[in-house]
Amino acid sequence: MEYKIGELVIGTVKNVKPYALFLEFENKINGLLHISEISDSFIRDIEKFGSVGDEIKVKIIDIDTTNGFLRVSLKQVPQEEAFSTHHDKKVVPVATEEEFAQLIEKMPIWIEETLKKIGDDND
Image 1 (cartoon, rainbow, N blue to C red):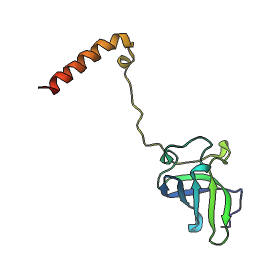
Image 2: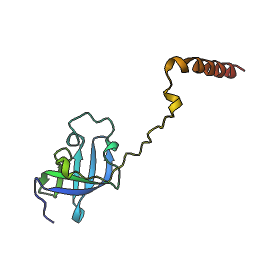
Image 3: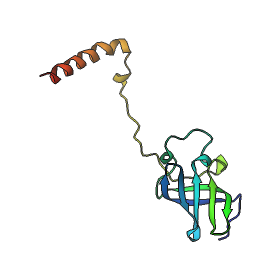
């Protein structure tokens, strides 16, 4: 397959570094999705956008013609064409209705529990 700048392609994440996701495309062509091409917002953890084995649709923004290496962008993919198999693996905590009680109601209970823990630690 011959690649062209501006083309949308799907790559598989092969390696993750703090600064980039390394992708592989058809015919074993490699590419780099630099952190600056993921989002215009600050990215604290690149793994929220991709992990090894994930597939991501990206836009080709440059081609190193010497070795066929692709520089790609995620933020330039139109929203309606976005595609990723990545699922953030972090678990969202579940809160019960009781945990939403007003602070004034819960504070005495928390104080009592904390004092009990402190007493248990000193034994």
